Image (cartoon, rainbow, N blue to C red; front, side):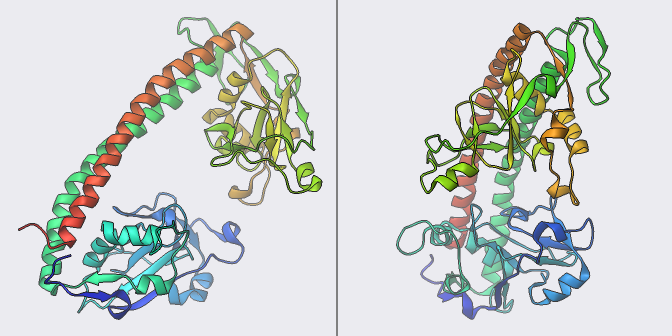
Length: 413
């Protein structure tokens, strides 16, 4: 920091440091319109992202009146993977509240300009303190006392404004490049999804004769393909008691995989082991609550899955990787949603009896394998390009933080 700038604990420069709460009832009380409830996924360094914002009713907002957001508040994520992300609430912003994972910091504007505070919070010095603390170990959360103890450089207000103006101009250029690269990543992801959906529902030969499948969500399929109910292809597997197997999970659009950061086995008690379902390599597994979002895939290795998953074992000779990809397509996801049961959209469940009644296309076995092989090859190329682009985004983000560090340290001369 500049020697000419004194540093003052944040608690002496603000009128509020506090967070909200998750409404009683959780996601089930969210409504389609009303008062916005800002969560950690809405708070980003480049501003608020409201594409997946949720709403609460006026009565609930009144109950949380002390954590209503005001223009020029600085919002800081204080838990989880996004800890440290922060942004300033725009001057022209409608009513909103926050949950317990987002902290409101309301500065005394005659001492500390909110946009300058936001810049300081994004600086490497404060970000490192947020993430690692004094002893160097990773933090899982921040409390208000720790936030209040942040040492904030405090130049005069005119210098704060100048620093912000310079930083915003430089950072905006970098953020523009980041958005451009992120747009390319999104385009590649969409191209990947479209290629897979076409391959598993139309095949690889654009000139093959087609016919009406008789399935509303599917439309035309190659003339030589069959159509079958899932019940003729799979049977439910409900096997328990294999504590020696590793834990698997099903992610949305990512299929079935070894549980991240863990190769743990169920070692507690026999009762614990008996609650987990066995999934065998080549099975199909889906999350009942997330099947409509694409949480399904072929099982890559023997393992244990949540009792809230459905495991389907093939009863015919088929390529489960083909059907795993098919069931992830938007058309299949929509059909799964139509067949799911629940009071609210976020609690819809697809049970075995509904899954088994779904009609799906069935190419010849060799064609299933060829389709999977072509998809793997094409997506490997796209994934390599995506990884290279994401590396560029990471480097640009590092450049962004370096620029902020220079500004907060006294700016460019």
